[in-house]
Amino acid sequence: MKTDISDANAAETDATLPTNTIFELLLDDQRRYALYYLSRKVGAVSVEELVDRIAHREGNPTSERLEQIAVEFHHNHLWKLVDSKVLRYDADAGTLERRAAARSLDPYLELAFVAEL
Image 1 (cartoon, helix red, strand yellow):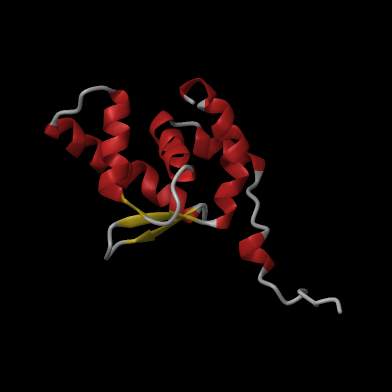
Image 2: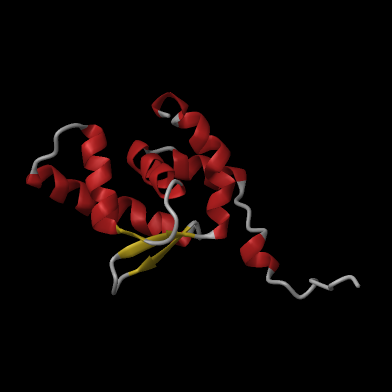
């Protein structure tokens, strides 16, 4: 017996991004690394953990630099990623989680960070 799945939520499972959006999201190094880091995680990640990883990638972070990255991420990157529907942000928990549309970025993220693997 064949199962009819025509009522499945295609918007969440088959989400793709326009090419311009992909390149816009990948344009900034911190945003690109944040997307890459999240692509390697299962489930939600705290914004604090993500900011810490971005800071350590740049070198030996000071508390001042961590704060600067946190503010930059919140004001410059977080809402662009949420509005593009690649991330889900839980403000109460302070966590980020990838959405289905983020899979459109994976091939580009792999190419961008192949040297770090």
